[in-house]
Length: 104
Length: 160
Image (cartoon, rainbow over all chains, first blue to last red; front, side, top):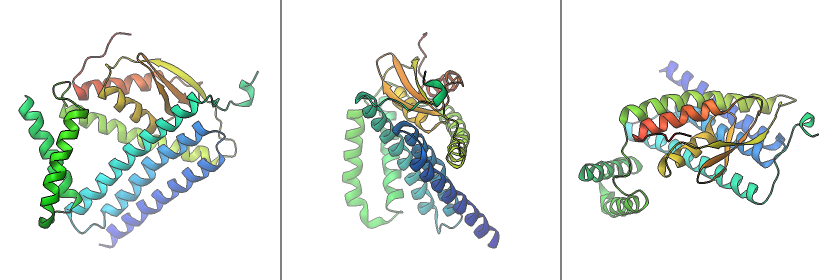
């Protein structure tokens, strides 16, 4: 039992760390496209790890399936929304940020 | 064939409702209405007979997806933590080989979650990707995912 709780905590902390990294990326990255990279990918992995951690604590099968379903729906939503934001930004002429040595 | 697809979709929606209500018996009245509505919407949005799923294909796709998700998340987390993230971003154009429809939608959404790629536009023949590092070829990854999706949906890739 204690081992399950320990595993659960490890995954939860790892998930939280990825969310933290994603948020730092969101604040630090230079333009809308790179920020979307940070958001979508970290949602996927951070939420996945948190759900994996919670799976060690669920009381029954239906709850387990429900949180897995939540993960899949959140993935589909975050990916689709990223694409829509990126496409809108491109259509409005937002130029992607370039590294310094590329700007010639 | 058509009956089988409708049957599988009904089973899927019943399963989703059962999961959402955590198996409670007193919600099946609303559930019945929701399941019928979901079936009608799914028939409008994804008409029957255009494709079918291969279960082995889904399995290989998920396996690839999970392993690459891990890489993708770690890569972005490391970039966020470094002083100089080392970006060389650019927008690249990739000709598509998947037929139009569901396959392309899955490709666009999968690439958003894969390492270093973000879909920014989709035209009839090409996909525009924002890549974090233009010095690395991204085409191999796109081609791999295209193949997996084609296998999953039992469709043929067009020659480009």
